Image 1 (tube, one colour):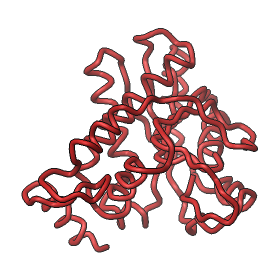
Image 2: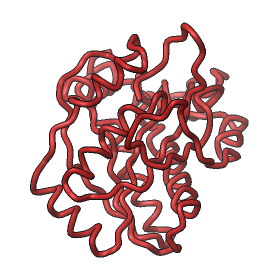
Image 3: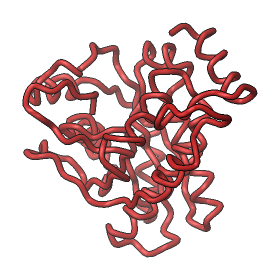
Image 4: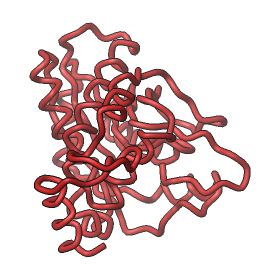
Length: 246
């Protein structure tokens, strides 16, 4: 979809009756009442791929990559329905808060959110970095709830091919060289983390964990610990299935 088509889709979501991104039911708004209720009813929980790649932080997911959550993520990420960023950002904020509570730091501990970056090509196709957009919304919601949260972008994504067709080993190899450090941002992060801030890596979907392990490894190599990763959805892998990146 071109940027013009994506822009029109976003505008249409605002001004025209359409279909629910979760179930396809007709009616006004991006989500029907039933899908809204289903998404709000999700509760973040620990997840772990098997086997987990070395260096993968503790992971928390809002839900499984299925049903309404899967459809809403696809609509937002691949079909240009950018108005869903508000809903998904709010859900991400709730998952981060739940994940930090499970990890142990007390309420009010400063958080530093690090979204997995899109490649330049993906950001162009999606009319902006989709995880950065969600992380910004999540930071706003966390701060409004009294949980101080900042945002950091210490890595840039190198060009790479779609990993959906790769096996677990192939994903790990692709992820290992996928990110380039931004030295000044990493130095600033190391100072903030040394003062007690908890760094939380963010992604939309967890599959093998290779992407989050690579991000965490890059940060740790620069003196930035990453105790927690939070995702919106975690896949259930099946033999022969095509799975999203992550």
